[in-house]
Each structure stands twice: as structure tokens, then as C-alpha cells.
Length: 193
Image (cartoon, rainbow, N blue to C red; front, side):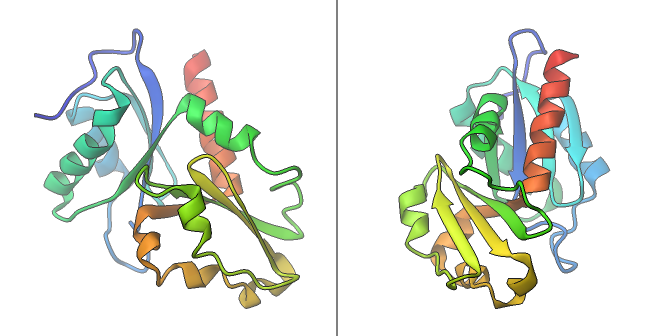
């Protein structure tokens, strides 16, 4: 049985970050279909943001049950397993507020990404697979995330791509700093409305 939201009163706002959809013509999930799937699952105040698979919603179900329930719901709807990293409004605010000093503040100089981790993968474990190129890459461990910055002028020399071939990568999804802060702004707006 999939838990459903009972309504916005007392509900917590979340963002579900889907991993590996709409990339290179694989795992195509139209955002309108994603929105409809969440609404049909009983989640409220559902919106999506850009094609990389970001669904914002409210639910009063326990957070621990939401991730697996949403994954089951999405697999039933779209026919293949889709991994979800769930963050509450409060958790996403912490990701942004706890970023390293200056992170994401020089977008013309550095390309900055947040690597979100499944609960089963600690940031300490994830950092073990991070390989940095001197004078190009920098990475920091956070609570449930890694922060990764690449010098824009030398981005093609970055070693960030080496994470992709690791077993740990299956428990990660990446969002740009711009997308991460926009998602927080959307959650803030929904909470104040």
C-alpha cells in the first residue's frame, strides 16, 4: 500500500529528485505525466521544475516511507525503476545554507554542482570515489550531499566524470547550484502562499 497525503494542513513540503531521466534520450518522463502521477498518488501542491526530474509536493506521510513509496509509484507508472532522492524543505534549506563559503557565487568562473546522496550512502563514503584534478576541481562533503566545483575555463579537464563509473554513483543524482537554489526558492514560495 502506498501512503498518500491527506492534505496541505500540517503537510511537509518536499522535492523529489529523480535520477537519470530525460538524459540522452533514455528514461523519458514528460513533466506533465510526472505531475499527474504524483497527484494520482495523493500528493498535494505538486509542481515540477525543468526536465531533469524535480517534483515538488506536500505530504503528511512519514519521510522514511515516502522515498520507497514514490519509487514504487513511478516504476508502476513509467515501467522501469527510477531512483529518487527526497529532501524536505528544511533539508534543502540546510543544503544551501551549509554550502562552503563562496560556493556557487562566481558562476562565470566556476561550474558548481550539488551531488545528492541516497540515505544509504554517506558523504564520507561518497568522497572516497571523488578524484580531483589540481587547479580545476574542488569538492566538499556535506550532510547528505557533496559540493563539487570545476573551473569553467578548464571544465573539460575535470575529473568529476570519473564518479560515473563507480558503484557509488548509482546512489547519487547531480543538480547544478542554480537548479538547487531555484528549487529552494520554489519551496519557499509554496510555503509562504
